[in-house]
Image 1 (cartoon, rainbow, N blue to C red):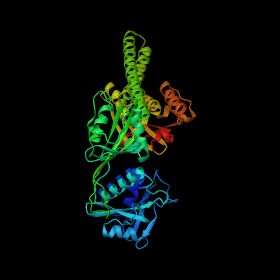
Image 2: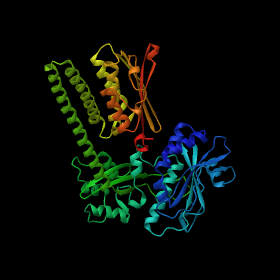
Image 3: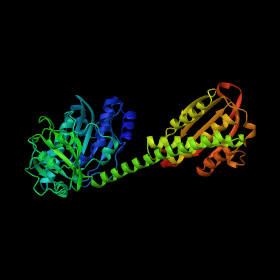
Image 4: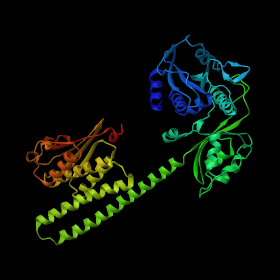
Amino acid sequence: MRVGHVSKTLQERTELPAEAIGALASLTSNWSLLADFALSDLILWVPTWNEGGMVAVAQIRPATAPTTLSEDVVGSFAPRGRFHYLDQAEVLGRATIERDSDAPLSPIGVEAIPVKMGEQVIGVIARHCSEAPRVAGQLEQVYLESADAIFAMIEAGQSWMPESLDEFDRWEVPRAGDGVLRLDATGKVNFASPNAVSSFRKMGLAIDLVGQNFFEIVKRMSIAPAGMSAGLVKVARGGATTLADLDGDGATLMLASHFLCPSPKVLGLELGAQCTVIVIKDVTDVREHQKELLSKDAIIKEINHRVKNNLQMVTSVLRLQSRRASDPGVVEALRDAQSRIGVIAAIHDSLSLEGATSIDFDELVELLLGLIHDDSGKIETAMQGAIGTVNSRIATPMAMAVSELIHNSVKHAGATQILVQSKREVGVITVSVIDNGIGAAEYPMALGEFPARGLGLTIVSDLIVGELSGQVHIEPTDVIDGLGRGTRVQITVPLSRRDSGI
């Protein structure tokens, strides 16, 4: 379940403070590994705002065992008394654990583990263990021992997850089936799953992992030009909870280490000694793809930068040509061409700075207004509203159209005040250029039915109506702060779901 949805549910149905909500949201965004280790379905229950019971806010199924819950229970309400194990875990602040003495790692029935922040119980994890698997071998034993250690840390209010995982890290974080190593307190490998062994074999490791000092193995395998990163050193030495990549010959492995140091007083179980569990994922193809994207992005940025420079050279040539022209009409046309090329250069400059596919449209409009303001100190400009980042496929023609309208306001309508209003809604962008110039009567009232008269309006129509399937509407209006009458030109452009970013 998404972190945002969990947080929203917690805010609406509980009285938990923001810190507790953040802690529970973080738990549910990272607990897939816990479900894998526990061979269990997990449900997070939290007390409701009226203390009448508990509500299920998140659920996760294991990738290592069959599910025991065929239906989603998120949103279900459990009044007090319905599930005794939830009530006991919440009220007593202790896990409700029942195990068979002949199978001490395998739960009997449903277990409940309190989630604590300090001494306060802020939630309860219900563990529904799969009935099919029991401890069939060392792999399952390591899984279940790790799960008990993590549950014990949760009951004690201890952190077992890396502190700063961004959304991308959460998406690609390894799961138990990708490969697991376990280090003892001295940093030696005392268990390696078959998939973990295969990952290191891919790097060329010929010796057995078990019994080896993991730091020496990682040091031998790493081929990073700058040497081992600080994060990788922490992972390799054990005793840390963090993420790091190991770049080796033929493979790149993501290593997610979890230092398990539960108090022996919790859960009521005989827990093993402190250890470090490292989950391994082969991310060779992912990292290569990321490198390709970064390289392509850098190339496109450089291309846009060079295009901008070339356009500036063209502008300089047109400026020289206009100085030699004697016909006022030719001079004016060359100056208009310089202005339009300058706008295109500004757009390419934004692309070279911000990225290959998107532009901060508001900053671009501010830049366009600045270009006009530089031409005449008598022009007052202002902006209202915001659009934010827009795909360059849409931003480029829209910026050109807005520039043409600003240019028309100054050159043809004689405006001394220009206001650009921007608004972004679901599925649509609206930009209005309002001025105090004279000229609304000369415009067609709806460019969607276009019989435009000037080159500037023809360009606007081609860009907005023809290229972006948008609409342009022109009307006389009261001007900025009620000063006289002027013209409002409104551009409306539809957004696809991909372009809207919503």
